[in-house]
Image (cartoon, rainbow, N blue to C red; front, side, top):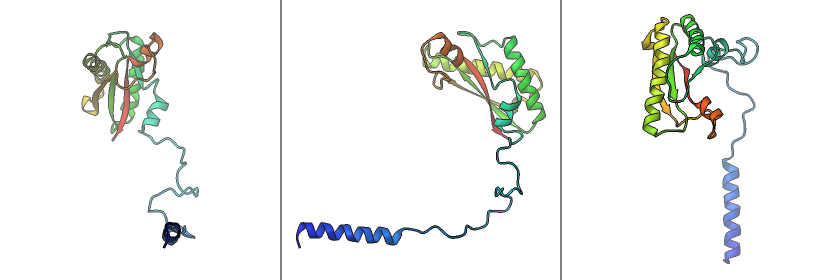
Amino acid sequence: MTIRKTTAMIAAITMLTVGACSKKAPETLPPAPEGTDTGTGTGTDPNAVVPGSQQDFIANVASDRIFFGFDQYNVDAEDMATLQSQAQWLQRNPAVRVTIEGHADERGTRDYNIALGERRANAAKNYLASLGIDPSRMNVISYGKERPAELGSNEEAWAKNRRAVTVVIGR
């Protein structure tokens, strides 16, 4: 056999094999598992916000984040108002746990910014605890400068990156 005939034969066999293995979509789908919203109007609105979720949190608090000055981790009056709003939501949702993420801008060493982010997250946690939120419901993590909210090397970007963010992690 020539190389051309062998190549053609291999191509034909490959097409037959692929064609034989392709699956045809079923005409009817199996029933949905028990308790699943099938979208037929018998369940809840698929766009509805689930109580106690991150979406519910964001929709019902002043903000999920507070901001800090350069090299600062103190909670100012504006931050207090935001955290009071978060505390009220957390009191209405006592089974919810949160993680408070601490962040820093790009200036400074990685180690310094990790420590600063942790101080910022702990400042938010401590203020929420002072408002009656059980500290065992709150975890703290610092990302330092590793997860910027805003890219850029200017004061506007840096100001948005010096923050503590409250994230709902579940019940």
